[in-house]
Image 1 (cartoon, rainbow, N blue to C red):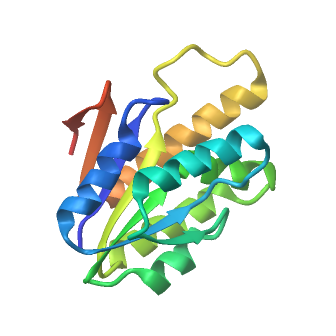
Image 2: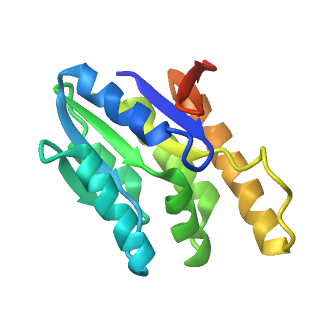
Length: 168
């Protein structure tokens, strides 16, 4: 079944676009969230995202091991939204997981998923170059994750100013 990667910058409208795609699908809506609640600011962001989704969603929290969960919940009568790959990568990065291997496992799971999957990720390569080695390493890793997941997806959409542009 089709997998779609939705890319964009911060506050670009990518999550809203993904949620609308899920609503229009008419399928049972499932979401995998990757964000840990580290502070009050993140708690507010998570609460805002919950309100945007509404109560019709089945939500799973998974900070690192997406592929097994995706294999478990993907079905032809469901759409699964993964929000977001940037926070997922951050979780892997700072726990010193093998990001390349985890990305390959996710890409493999996408190619065999029996339902529709929508993944959300930030496009970090359009901004100012980070000042630190860690920032540059993370930006580069995000670019590689986005490239690999895009290659495993049937469709890739870039969202800027709330407007979707189909790339693939």
